[in-house]
Each structure stands twice: as structure tokens, then as C-alpha cells.
Length: 194
Image (cartoon, rainbow, N blue to C red; front, side, top):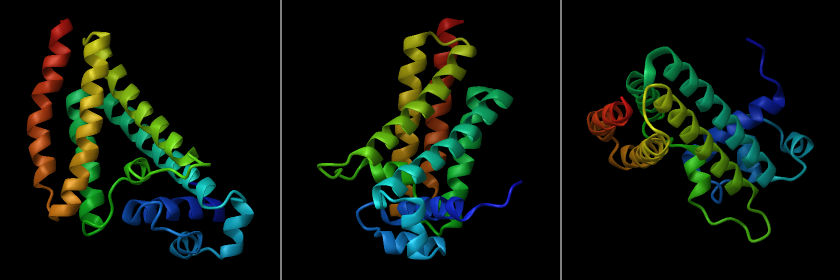
């Protein structure tokens, strides 16, 4: 595995801080400090400032989650892939002592600047990617196009909301609840076309 570059560390650090504090509550100075990078290097790598760094952070998270989703869904199918994805989120919220959520959701729920909605558009692309990856797996396992898309949207939206619930409640019980609730939904989606 390649050693992360200073730019990579900035992006990963920004994703971590966005997951904890959101976009509006994070200044460029704080993003640099959280990443362990000098403020000047932030502007060197991201001359567009906080917005450009936020877009890079969302794209980084999208790439990481998309790889994990593809890997798990290809290896185990939609049901076990979902369970592995839920385990990943369980680890994230527990390891952060319930301080970190999804940086993509954090960016998506904040009102964009009037002149710069690039972070919001990056978040929309991430949600589209995750939904598309899951829908593709559902289709491969027998779901029709409409059912696959609707079920994938339900799953992604449910997981995103559940992570927020876990943070607020300081508990992973909600993840257990949606595991139990979503598995039959996935099985019905796959069975409808079969």
C-alpha cells in the first residue's frame, strides 16, 4: 500500500472532521489542523479553499465506500453485503465514540453557499453511486429495474439516517434494528423477479 501524500492526508483529515462537525462548522484552519497539515499547504493543494477540499473529501469517501460496497456485494450478494456494510458503519460509530457519522450526509444536509454548491453536488453523486451499486447487485440477483432502484434508495437512505440516530443515541441498536428490517426487504426484492 502506498504511503499517503500530504494531499491525501489533508483529504482524509477533512473527511474525518466533516464526519464529526459538518461543513459549516469546519473552517479551513480547523481542517488543516485536524489533518496535521500546515494551513499554507491546504491552499497550495486546494486553491479553491474549503469548498474544493470538501469536494475532494466527499469524493474520497465515495471512492472508499463504493469500493467496499462493490467488494462485499460481489463476494456475498445483496443480503450478506448489506450486513457487511452495516458492520462497517457500526465500527465507524463505535471507534469514534459515536462522534463520527457520514461526511457525505453532513455535507448534504447543510444549505450550500449561494455561489458554490459543488460540495452538495459531490454528495449527490456519492448517493447516486451507492444506490447504483446496490441496485446493480439486486438486478444481478433477480430484482427488476424499478424494484432494484427503489430498494437501493430505501437501503441507502435508511443507513444514512440510522447512522445519525446511532450518534444521537450513543448506541448501535438502531443498526441492529435496520439489519432485521432490511433483510426481508432485500429478499422480497430479489424474489419478485424470480
